[in-house]
Amino acid sequence: MRLQERTGALLATTLQAKNWLRGRTEHHVGISGLFGNRVAMELLQEADCVIAVGASLNHYTTEAGYLFPEAKYVQIDTAEHLVMGNGAAADVYVRADAVTALDALERELARRNVRIEGFHTAEVRRRLSAPLVDPADFVREPGRIDPREAITVLDEELPGEIDLVLGSGHQTDFGTMLFQRSREIISNYGMFGAIGQAPMLTIGKIVADGGRPSFVVEGDASFLMHLPEFETACRYGLPLLAVVMNDEGLGAEYHKSAAKGLDPELAVIPTPELGAVAVTLGGAGATVRTTDELRAALAEFVREPRPTVIDVRISRKVLSPPYRRLWYGEDV
Image (cartoon, rainbow, N blue to C red; front, side):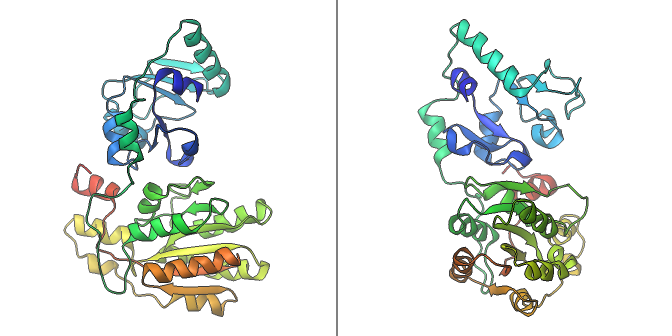
């Protein structure tokens, strides 16, 4: 943080460190790369130097280098040497412990009386303090919630003391981008190369953390792959909340099929009310179709953390910004 203040720098994180230090600086831009918002991308493109601390600078973090077109790279890591995601080496590679390297760099800049305003201006703070919203219009579909609204409600209603595990599939893009509250977050993206693993990951996390309440946000197809494991959570009385973002289909396949000119309806799979299924398995549950119903169901879990499934019926009409970028080439 001292180095950031001295150099007028922005603070960005990789996907796995989402929201880290957000509460300690006004100049936090969120995730660097594909899951970053439009403001973050515009600001990061102006950077003349990127100091990467323990980050691999992979294809997604740097947008293959296009996110930082004019920047020099300083990479700090304990490995003997690393190659960045664009196949090139950093301009300066420092093999060191992160804290040791950053302290030494900050002390040297202090010795030289270096202090730069950089991005630490009122205008940048104004842009970063604006509500984080998707520029696309919100969808009003009877009996279904816009997934962006659902994530906003989750972030508002669940205290920061309740940890978060993000699942996989198209629906995860919304949570990856829009959760803003400082809390412990585990992103399941790419960990297993298969959907459906996040609920079990959450069960293991709760046990390892001594029963700390946690919630997982997962898709309907993903959740159904390991539905019996919810009974395990019930048997042990774990404070697990499974939020199923239910578009009644294979969301990723639905949207990718549409982008490729194939029939997306082949990926539509109706599901039963999963809230009722959860009750049958010995837990609590609800199927919600409005934000008011969602708030009420979340309040129940906050009041009494126990094995719970909230089946959130979401619209399939909303395409996430990462999908719009990757599959349609949109500049969003």
